[in-house]
Image (cartoon, rainbow, N blue to C red; front, side, top):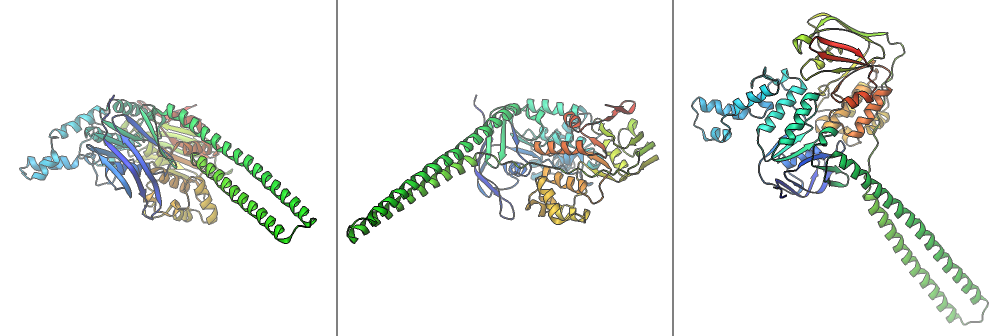
Length: 538
C-alpha cells in the first residue's frame, strides 16, 4: 500500500535558548499511518511536535510539509478571557462569520472562513454529541473541568479536517467513557496522525511507535505491545554486544601484556649475552638500536590495538540507551495525627453536577480513597474544598491536618521562577545539595531545575509540582492528588506508584487509570452515582 507523506524531517536538530542541544540529526516520514511518539520526560517530544507543525523552526536541517497540519498542545489554557470557541480553535472563523453577516466585504474575513460556512452549527452538533449540549461557543473556558476542556479541544482538532493531526497527550483528563470515544475517533481518522502519549491503552491503537531518546528517533512498525517486546530485545542485544566488547578488550589486553613481556624477556637475555661476549662496541650499539626499534614498534602496534578496542566499546555503548532511574521520597507521616482527618457535613459544593453538590464524608487517618466519576461531576471541586481553597455554600467543611493539593493544571507553580527557587522557599531546613539531589532523582537535572517553570515540558512541570508538594518543610498528612499521573512517562508513573504505596498519611486521588489506582493500594472508593456520592470499601 502506498502512503501519502505529509511531513518529512531531514537531519533536524534543535538547540535550547541557552545553546544546549535538545536533539540532533533527526529523520522522519509522517504519512497516513497512526503514529505514536513516546519518550522520557524532557527528551523534546512537544518541541518536536511544534517543529513539525511549523510553530517553531529547527536550529538546522529541513522540515517539509505537504498539506495542512493541526497541532493540539498538551497544556490547555483556561484563562478567564477564553471561551469554548477558543478551545475548539474556531473563534477567529466565528468572528469573521459574524462580521460577514453584519455586512463585511473584507477579503481577509472571507479568507478566514474559507469553505467552513457551517462551522457554528458543526460545533453545536459536536457539543451535543459529546454530552456537552449545555455549552455554547461563548461559554467561558474557566467554567469547564479539565476533561470537558480536553473534549472541546479535541472537537476542534477533528473539525479541522487537517491533512496531519498532531495530538499531545490527548487522553489526559478524560474519563473512561470518553477515552474509549477518543480511541474510536482516532481509528476512524482518515488522514495523517501523530499522537504523543504515555497512555499504554491508547498506544495499542497505533500502527507505528516512534521513540525519541538519547539515540535519536527509532521507529517500530507496530503498536505498543510490539514496541515493548522489540525494545526489550534491542536493549538486551545492545547490552550483550557491549559485554562482548568488554570481554574481548580484556582478552586482548592479556594477550598484549604477554606479548610485551616476551619481548622484554628476549631483550633481557640478549643484553645478558652481550655483556658476557667480546663483541665490538659498534656491534653492541647496533644490537641495542634494533632492540629499541622493536620495542618502539610493538608499543605503537599495541597502542593502536588498544585504541581500536576502546572505539569498539564506545560504539557498542552508544547503542545502549542510558535511562536514569526515577525515585520519589514519600512525605513523612505524623504519628500524632488525629484519628479523624476531615469531615463534610451536609456540605454543598459551589460547582459540579447538581445532584452531587451535597456531600457527607468522614475521612479517617490512613484511608486511601479513589475519587472517581465522569468529567464535570465535581471531583476537583471536592478536592479544593478539602484543601481549604474553596468555601462550601452551606454546611460544614473541616480539615484537621496539614493538607497538600496537587491540582491537575499545576496552577500554584510560578511560571517565571525555577523549581529550585520555589522549593527553597517551601523548605528552608533541607540543604541546597539535598534539594538538588531529590530533584535529580525525580529526573530534573541541574540545568532544568534552574530554568523558569514555563520552559519545562509538561512532564517536567508535573515533577516540579510534585517536588513542591511532597518535599515541603511541613510534611502533608493529607494528600489530595488530582490526576497525578498525567504527563508522566512510564518509569516516573511507576516511581510515583511506589512512593504513594509507601506513604503512611491519608490520601485522596482522582484518576481514570484503574491500573494506577490498584498499584497505590486504594482502600476506599468515593464514586459519583445518580443518587449522589457513594463511599465503599475495596
